[in-house]
Image 1: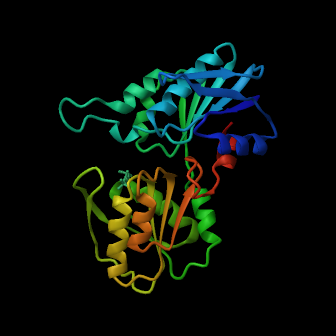
Image 2: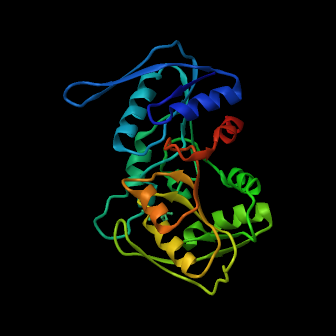
Length: 277
Ligand code: R5P
């Protein structure tokens, strides 16, 4: 078995190959002057695992090209971050179910994702698809920090099970805030009856995109006299000014996995993926 790292997941692919003690196969990626992308697999392959997160539309195109370039081999695909999963259903009449559109284009012998935003999206794939859970790895990392009376907080119901799962690893408390989305990058967060005074708080979500959700939550919890506030997520999308937004709001540290290569991924999901393969 060989591993190919797509352009969005070079580091993670190398880490998975190292975990498994297997060879990396190289591919060349480039763009023509008109913007079209080009892929060529340079090594011989029979049994291959392609690892490519889907943060941008371009990432999906490269993934589809890689799959086609490997069409004579047995191909498994790992999509550590599956973009578009937030649009996994029609919220308003006339909307495209974008996650379905993307999932249906991806054909392989098996597909693996990591903490996909909405698990019913897995059913849109035409082939067997499994989702892996990075919560235990986040929990292990949290155990290594010197947290004072930690409490894990999910910014909304959707992230509640992730907060519960990570908190249970430490035998810590968890709670859920109430979130209302006002626009693409603005949310309103309401407190419940939490007592966070003098406690370290870890706000945990599956992803941080614009940072709107987390920065509102950080400010709210700091007003409630919490001690240090950490944010943790599986997928550090961290679009545009998200990192500075979080630090301006007063975050102590951003803790994330390496499903997206953003330089903040201190927890590697490589052992999780290697174990599943
Ligand atoms: C949505 O339900 C997700 O779990 C995240 O809460 C959301 O995507 C975060 O987005 P942003 O960082 O833009 O507030």
